[in-house]
Image 1: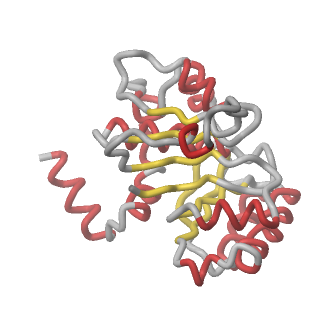
Image 2: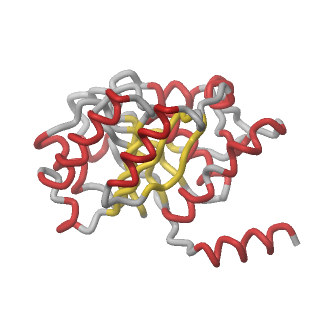
Image 3: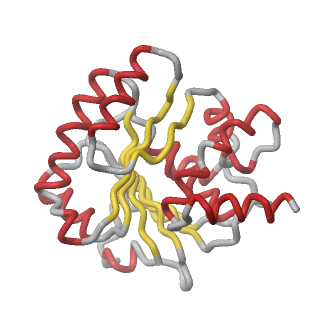
Length: 230
């Protein structure tokens, strides 16, 4: 079982969008997937309630809710047998001991960053906290950064791109700013489960992220693409 957390100390950076689309992508591939919602707003939970019955099942874990007195936390957060991927939608403002606890429980960290001066500044401090407080290097946790809600050919995106290139972390992919993700959320599906021709460009942006998560080399990705078209 691999645990993948989508986290950034700043709110509004699109953690839920990444978490729900990643969970639906894994589930659509036949991988037993759980979505753990730690965000007090419960956005991932709402998305899953909208999910059509004919779509691949995703097991919801309402980690943000208070469990009943007679329940232990282990029971409340239990996984389905055979769960292969756990996607964790983290709350905003995670620091200190809470950040340490999250890091100790995961295998992979994905940090979404928006193209704005405020978000770049916030991400700088959060990544420092991860390296110092979270102590991720000694734990062997993989960390990658993605640019979210991007409009390329803008000055602010160029600033974000320069910032990400200075990090000693993998720059995984860019997710463009489009209403397609809003429409997918409203229907309880992921971008890969939509068949509108307009989402084809969005689907392509997820390939580098998935290849990194599953340790697929560029050569293997090309081979897989060719065999899929054959």
